[in-house]
Length: 75
Ligand SMILES: [Zn+2]
Image 1 (cartoon, rainbow, N blue to C red):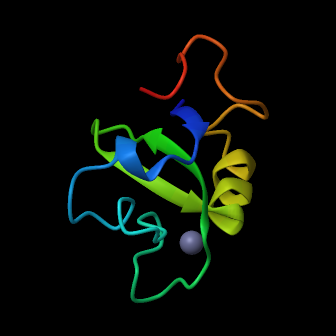
Image 2: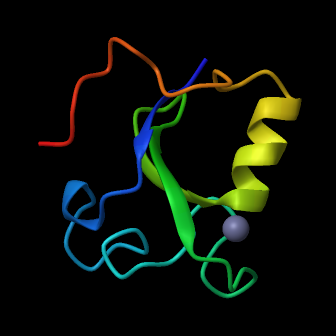
């Protein structure tokens, strides 16, 4: 289960897709969607996901339906 938070570009590494406002889950080249969620994937990488990515992750049971309550606030 991935830990999620509302999308925050500042949480992502400099020059990453997330920092630049792109969806890193699908990849900047293949997804024009604006990120709505930030999350740690199973390898511990910080990912950003568009609405479609969030739907896919929910469908696969990889993220909670709601923001992970114990993941804390953006910071
Ligand atoms: Zn996407």
